[in-house]
Image (tube, rainbow, N blue to C red; front, top):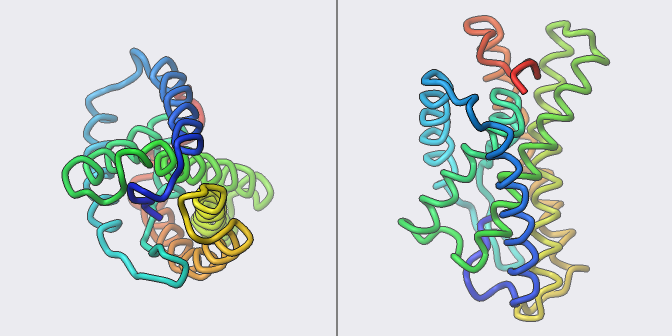
Length: 215
């Protein structure tokens, strides 16, 4: 899902950078004065884990690749604000140090993985938890769909961005179905892993699951 340099035209890159910067500024205001040593440690550990997981890539038709994203999981654990910081740290290191994702496409990659995936995962989990009344099977289903749907929607957004760019050889009628379809398949694995981690944390360290009370 990491878009490299040369795929996005100036308009698309500028628009996604604007979304990333505006949202990032809002997040920094939300977390100002609320970062604790425990939060910082958890952010660092999660960023390292997500970074390692995302380095495994599988090429797919359409000029891009698939990999574990993890945005839904960090959204469930840290909420949309701190989850954004985790994913942004990961994307910055990958882009600037390992050249995984282009500098010109950083705004798009952050919009897809640090904003859309995190927020969708968080909202789906919180919504379904209320529906399922926090029962064990319900919590497992909520975590699974959070991981799965966050991946699918962020993948579709990636397809939309590269498809609308005149620099990419395929239009959005091809890129969106390819990205959404393949990520729907990958999302099954991501949802399964997300559910396993959430259930484990619920049993061993329930305080690590974001309750929505720290905003």
